[in-house]
Structure formats: structure tokens, C-alpha cells
Length: 300
Image 1 (tube, rainbow, N blue to C red):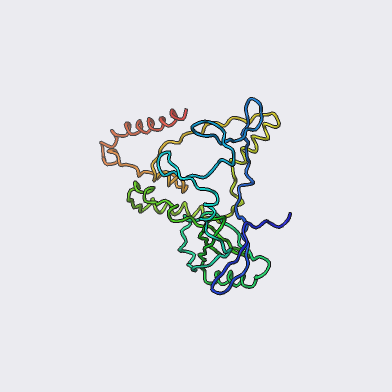
Image 2 (cartoon, helix red, strand yellow):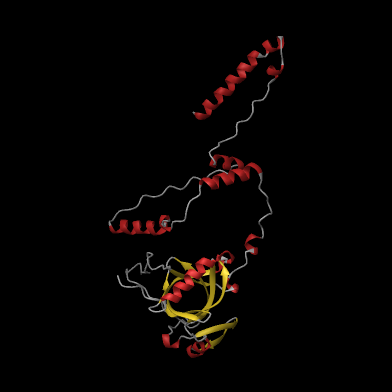
């Protein structure tokens, strides 16, 4: 297997120090199972075709142009050379604007990760930047033109190199206020909180991405294999709907404590003494027999 192909090459600059670097894709969906759209009747692949929304006539590629809607059905046409002229010119430089503490990073702004490695020369400066950031426990904010757009990039030490994550702009990230506005102000205390902490403590682990299975991909791969072999997969049973239970009881069961046993109540027979105690004996025995038989009938 040959060396991976760089998505972008340029320079990273901090202060008056610069070194050549290359960006490589860190996450890709190319390994996922992909489908083609077919004509059910013929089994042939179908192709997309752009048509005029009013006339229904096909529109050739040379006649297709970008447009921005200013009113309902009213557009401003933007020619390819006009769009190209508006795009910021790239100087191929990742210019670091600031170093920030790692714990100040809100990952809701994370877009796409790339591996950032030294390109041929300038390894000393690259390693200097990497190790300096590690020691100071900081990340770097840089800007550059990537893929015809001005992007803000977060750069962090990652193994032997750096990882550069493009960031969403503030206008692209929705406020959490709307999502959480109906969440009431509750304060959980006492046994419930202690049980939750206990359950969390028993489930502590470490992050290992290799243990995460893409069940959809696995299921689709098995389906394709079964279709090739001419067999059908067994139908799955509908999952049983669990009944709504008391939160505290569910916590106790999750913690392996089960239900709390209720303290036995004092009966009138226990409170009475003397002759009255003898008279109460029969009803007590009968009550015990009756209650002991009830679970047997329910079990059957």
C-alpha cells in the first residue's frame, strides 16, 4: 500500500517560525456499504437528470448556473467566474492566531478532523511546536483557506503529530437554550443520587473505538450475503415493551439491591396479652395461611 494522498499542502506559521505541512483525512465514510438506485423492472441503474421545474425539459450541464433566491421564485444568477473571484485567495498558510487552554474547547463546534504532518522538510520546527503545545497543555487556533473557503482550524497534539479540526462558525451552531427550555429545574439528593453514583462507578471504563460495532453495516452485510446465497434471514421478534416503573426501584435493581424489605407491622394479637391472646391465635394462623397461598396461585 502506498503512502496516503494529502488533501492539502501548505505551511504552518507561529511567530516568525514556519514549516511545510500536509493535511490527511482522519475520518472517511468510503468504507461504508453503498447502494445504487436501480430500475425495478429492468434491473438497470438509473441516472439523475436536471430538468426545468416549469417546462420539465432536461437542462444540459453548460446551461446550469448557480442562483441565490431573493424572493419567492426570484433569483440572482451568479456566474462561475464571479463566484471564483469572490472566494478568498489562499496563501497556503495555517497562521496561528492564539494558543488556548485545552479545557476551554467546546466540541460542539468541531466539524471534520485531519491529520497534520510535516511535509518533507521542516521536521525540527514541527516537533518543536508539537512538544511545546504538549508541555503547555494548549491547543492552537489558526485560519486558512481550505477547499475554497476561509476556515478556522483547531490544532492539537496527537500522537507523533498534530490533528487539525475544522470548526463550525458561530452562526452554524444552534443555541442549546431552545433544546433545553422545557427542562424543569430539579435537584436530586439522598439515596437516588447515591445509587446513581454507585451505578456509574461500576460502569467505569476506557475509550476504545475498536469495541464499537456498526450494527447497521454488519446487518446489511449479512443481508447481502444471504441474498447472494439464496437464503432468507430469520425475522426478528418485536421487543417486549417494558412497563413504567418507579425510578428509585429501577435504580435499586440496577445497583443489585432489589426491593427494600418493609418492616413487619405489629398486629393486634402482638399488642394484646392474657386471655385475649389465645382468642386471637386462630385468626392469625388463618391469615398467614391465606397470604402464603396467594403467591402460589399467582405463580401457577
